[in-house]
Amino acid sequence: MNKDAFQNLKEDMSFIDGWEDKYRYIIELGQSLAPLEDIHKTSENKVNGCASQVWLTHKCEGEGKEAVLTFKGESDAHIVQGLLAIAISLFSGVTADKLAQGDSFSYFEALGLSEQISSQRSNGLKSLLAKMQHIATVEANR
Figure 1 (cartoon, rainbow, N blue to C red):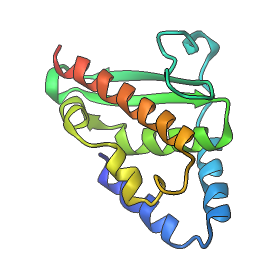
Figure 2: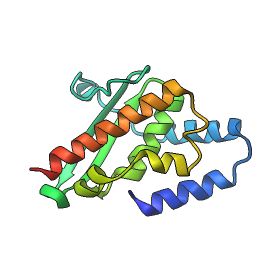
Figure 3: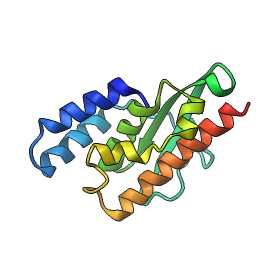
Figure 4: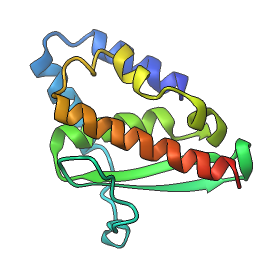
């Protein structure tokens, strides 16, 4: 996990009162993501288990456990796009080994997000994080 990104998100969230404003902030984070090119919106890049459409791609620098991953993605739902932006900021720049072995959902719990999103979105988020960890596992074992 990118500790600086986590600390920044945690600090930003602490200054925002009320969940309506936090949802707006999450949506704004999602709007900051660059659109994914249509060529990357394939079934291979689709995150299964999400009610909305979510695609995730990655770039890998290096090899094996020390490979550093960078993620890009897009969703057709505003809140999910924001959650995707958070996941990308937390887990891009992390070695494949660290991401593969970590409990990525716990960071969303620490930010207080897991309690405030619907069970359907929570399941979708877990599917996204599982795909990220799967990618990391594959890259770590190359």
